Image (cartoon, rainbow, N blue to C red; front, side, top):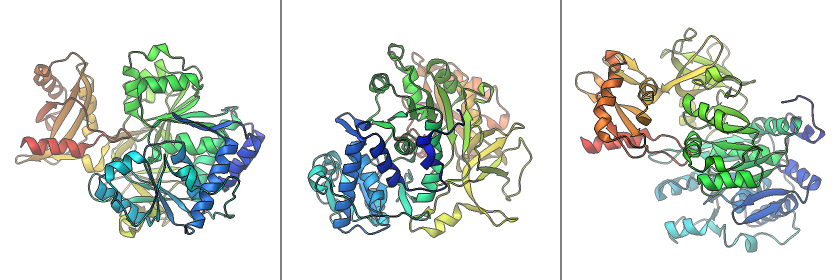
Length: 519
């Protein structure tokens, strides 16, 4: 991208700024331009600004205090995005809740957030029942929002956000108990996304993005917040469907998107993929789950524009970027630390390891969370303190190695590492070996208890189309013949579909539950 500065990007080059003042500026600059679009309609920038002000004003009238959360629960839509932005405009904190969570988890999140308002869509209200969170003020997103907001033209009370003020809470995708609430400050969100928004404008890109992952996910913010700051257009999909995604991208000349690996895979598998014109695409991002080198190659071959993989955590820590279109020989990595990010690889005693050796990743950047909401102990558990400088770093939870060129290769999650007979076994190595077999569409490996070895690796595969389960023993024999004795799989199971979260993360806890049921 060119480094020549576009005058429109000037506010975004400031060290700190107000999201809401910037959005108000964009509404004055291009009032008739489309800002948000979903399956039900669209809003111009002037309409977006008016509605954000009216919702924020009504929040203030109904008791929202500075720094208080506003809970949002439902399918992604224009109204969902408006409430997210209005919560911030009113001096509150956007708290999107995970739709896939259990009722008990949702109650825990809402209570933890401290919200008094719950914006919820009709489908979720019907699912959860009238008795769900009765102490909160309920506003039905898709039925009541227009009537609930303040009258047309109302301006919300002025609000001057400070860098340390909370901007949003993103709840982690916990599988048991109440997920942790990850708090991001205004300064963190500005540092993270103002630079991205400025880069679009400085490169001459008027961003038109397609957001097809849920707005409760931190992943989706990449296709939402920087595009808003740049005065672009965000197309919001309530549910990802391959043909709908392709048709939307073609119809509205989408040039920026964020997809998780499973979405890229589904697009590559879509029989009608080549019927659609995606020539407007300039920037494709990917994050949130392992992105195989082979899938990256397919995306590079079949989809236009740059492909950028982002490796980080919602909590912060290091941010690595892989410009896959520039480094086709590094597709097995997640790239190098971005400017302003630092990475260390430590052994189990927190000593740095040599280049090329695997170890525990810890990272530091300017985009670190403020902490877990109401959980200072859990916050501290995730930190590593540099003994020389006293700086606080984030433990990334991954095991990885750095090559001589500075590219980072992930070899597994720390909690997923298998220790068998005293040897460390990385599931990703075995998964990669399984996926070399053309009969395997997708693979996952977990550790299971073993009386002889302590733990032993066990594999799951989703077979390629047309492959019979009778071939699984041969696949097992092939992979075990190609790895060391300590790495051999104890068993291999074929399953119809890998269990994944709504943003495509493989749920190994569910694979362990399958094993528990079989035993």
